[in-house]
Image (cartoon, rainbow, N blue to C red; front, side, top):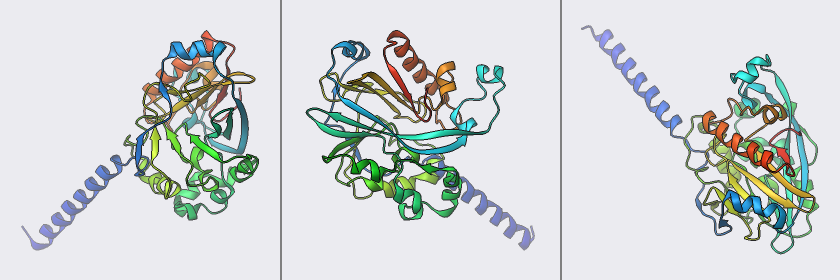
Length: 312
């Protein structure tokens, strides 16, 4: 074998090894490398107790805040391969969506946020939060319009925040973190920090930067968690969009409210019971979780539903 041919085979082998190594690394990426530990808040519960709380649970105040208007590909928000989507002839397009945060006030335990909205700092200078320019370009800031920044929301809360309950760790749900004091504890669903998915290789650096200097994330420890032990707020493990995706049932002063998170991004998806699309890590589990939440509301029509990114 000639010297040039051997050298060429060597380069080809080295390149193949490099590509294989990169592929393994990408597929092993988790959402964050930030530390996590079991939550010291909340009690293990079940759906029966949740259903019973709708009439007897303590009442809390919940305020919905539209943080930003935005657009996103419908193929990510909705499974366009679902028979119902095909029957409706739905096509991929830039869908109008919103980014929300929720301010929860418990009469004894204080003030909390559910998801964080979008901070002005993150919007104005994403690179300062660890986002490389190429990723910022993909994020679609040019179609985002901030309505109420996280800074503006936090300024309306008179007492220090006691915690933030996250539906999951996607950037559009944690981009308000720069406006939130670093000592405020953050709560996530079980498995959220352990799931491995190739797209996390692109976003993990940003997520890590947003959590830098903060306490360990606190994981909910069961499928149903009675957060305050009084039936006022429940965390419901709803995996599929991400492994730790979490919905929240809030027995508010205005009646029970289900914050579905990204178990359903869109009104059409909820109304036709079609799960999210390409933005999810496990569509089969996503479909199962959506079915559970839809059935809960069918069984208890007094529940008002707030979706991840659109109004019903």
